[in-house]
Length: 121
Image (cartoon, rainbow, N blue to C red; front, side, top):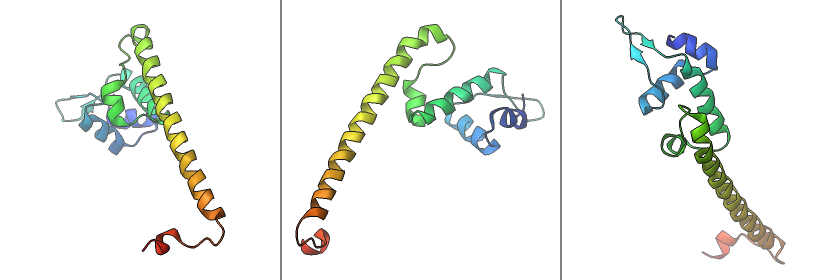
């Protein structure tokens, strides 16, 4: 499958596909004419990659921490662990944002509120 066909099948741009290939997330072979040739399973892999990104995983996390789709049954426990870790990360970020929000609201509710940046200078 050539890059244009893969782009159409996945809804991704050719530049995105080249970027993923450069990072090692997508493999192709070169045809005699220099064109990239992607295997049919590249479509499934890219859907998996995009789903992982939509769940909050970075490309670095996907590269190092998510199991591949070679054997989905064997990868299921690893994937569950990765998803639980991501859920913990999200909960920690929510807690930190909640604390930040509380601090900001407390500052705004203080009588005689002035700009805390200017008053500390």
